[in-house]
Image 1 (cartoon, helix red, strand yellow):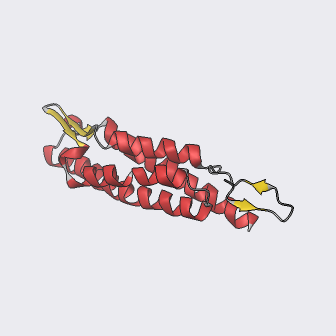
Image 2 (image 1 turned 90 degrees about the vertical axis):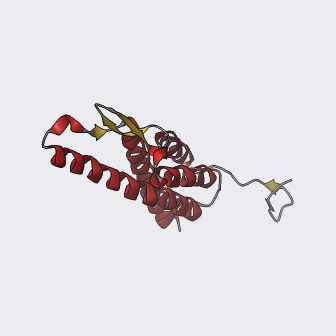
Length: 143
């Protein structure tokens, strides 16, 4: 069944996907997968993201990117991008500061370094922020 109809009686279908859907899915996958990978690597072992509440928070908000990808409204998609990227950037910043703090306390650089999960969640947040910027810019010019 069509979502809207025109005056001529023919059914008009709305598109479900928007130009940022693929990027939102990729960014959401990066955040979701990166939440369970190691965020801090040390010579004694790795600290996974889901070992703290910040990892669980990023894992919990990542599905919002998938929801925003299948909604046909650009402003809602921009809000979903920002709702996922905001906590992810905060969690990534806190853990990068912890890596720097561990290295300063130890007095040697290779004491701890960012793990693959931390790189993935920050990368996913960058993808989502870029997508929000592009969608906001295109919706402002088309309105």
